[in-house]
Structures are given as structure tokens and as C-alpha cells.
Image 1 (cartoon, rainbow, N blue to C red):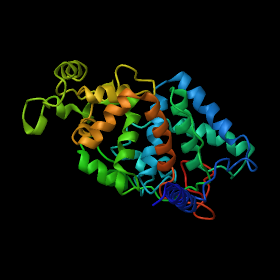
Image 2 (cartoon, helix red, strand yellow):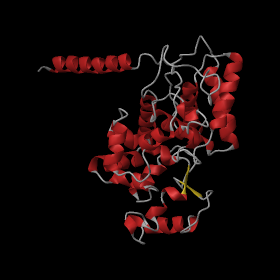
Image 3 (cartoon, rainbow, N blue to C red):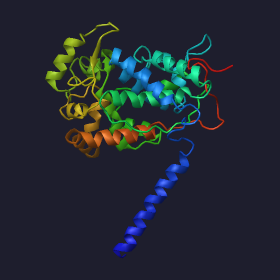
Image 4 (cartoon, helix red, strand yellow):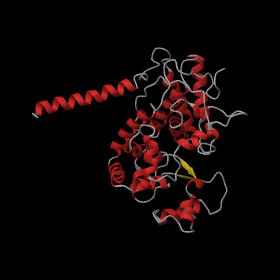
Length: 329
């Protein structure tokens, strides 16, 4: 094949991929509220900024909220719905309660939006905007958020348990659960970088310190000095629910590649973090991100946009909640 024909063929393939992606997610649009509620994204960012400046840890919560929302029933704000006497909702499932916070930030943004654009901006879009703003306020790369999501009417704690990957997952399990959501193994490694900010309860990793594989020895894959530090912060047998440690000790409030530097040095906090070193492909990606921060920030932004399109409800589907915690009557 001549070089000219090869270039034309390559260009055609790229165009097919672009058009197919557009057709799948054409319901979501950047600037969706430009005419219907022009201040929507500014109002959300203002609320996120006020909250994060008061408590830097909320940036990680709002980022995690988007992830936990999208992996259960798609990005439909089901994670915001309150439990009732007859139903335990996602937010009260073990992966979310008591560790997930920031619901009041979404409430405040929604109240302001309802005051100026009643019934226009969905709670699902507010979560997506807030996650982007949290990344940007933490020093990460900002990105355009395609919007137009609608809010779901169902929220079940049991579905959070089966759809959210626990910190004990190995590489194959992580790859499979991300693949079920339409995300590649490469995107899984990229999105794992969200652990660059935020904290974890000791109970999420204490099995690596005291009772690894049913013995009294610690996980041999964990850096001994780091393990000793964690043992000081998380004493054996402690039941203090407020015992937490930063997931990326060197820069816990910055969206940087310190996470990947720690992982390659066997200082990943979770089993799932260390699992990224257990295959040549994923380990190479970890090393690449550790060396090239700009590459990760760019690819993380792209992966967040893709994750934000999982099983979205659009058009006339479902509803736009008046109160993010309650399904409309």
C-alpha cells in the first residue's frame, strides 16, 4: 500500500472511531445549559470552591462520589438518594457509609440552581461538574464536561456492594469490573490515580498489616518502613471509626502523580493499588505516569469524561429531581 493510501486509510479509521463515539454519546453535550441555565457550571464551581477551601478533604469526596455514582446504575445521581423506612439506599451501603461525604455541597449547589433555573439542572450533572471542579482545585487538569444527564429513581445499597470494587481486589478482578462498565484496563490504571487525594479508614487495609492471608504476618509486598508507619497510625484491634490515613502521604491534597511513585515503591495503600504492578503492561503504565506527570493529568481527564458517560439517562428518560435526596412525586 502506498504511503498516500495508508494515510487516507488511517484518517478514515480515525473518523469512523470519532463518529461512532459521537453517535453513542451524542445525547450529552458540552455547554448543554448554555441557553437554559447559563450560570449552571459557575454556580456549581462556586459551591465546590467554598467547600474545598474550608475542608480540602472534600475534593476527594466529590471525586469519589462521581465514581461511586457512575459505577452503580450509571451516572444518574442514585448515590444521592436518601434511605427510607422501606429501602436502604446506596449512600448507606458499606462502601459509602461512613466514608463518603460532601452531600451537602451538592445540596447547596442544587438549591442555588433551583432558585435561578427551576427544574433545569440535573443532580447527576451537578455531581459530574463538582468532580471536575474538585480535580482542578486540587491542581489537576480541568476539562469540558458533556452534560444532559437525567436523574434516576432507584437506589439500592445491595447494588453498591456488587458494583463497586473493594480495596482487596486483584488485577484480574479490577480489570473485569471496569470492563463491565465499558472501561479498558489502561483506563482502570489511569482512574486509579484518583487515590492521589483523600484519606482511607484503617479498616480498608488493616488486613495487610496484621492478618494477611489468615496469618499474623504482614503483606510481604508492602514496603516494611511504610508498613511500620501504618501500624503506628492504625493500631491492631483499634475500633476507632475516625482512624484514617492519607492515601498519598507525600501530597494528600494535590492531584499529582505521587500516587504512582508510591505504588512503584511498594507503598500503595490498598491491595488493589499494589495489584497494578502484577502485570508487565500495567506496571509499565505505572512507571510511565510516575515519570511523566503531564501524561497522567491529560489521560485522567479523558478517562473521567468517558466514565461520566456510563449508562446515562438522557432526553425524556426519568426525571430532574427538585431535591437531590428525594425522588420527585
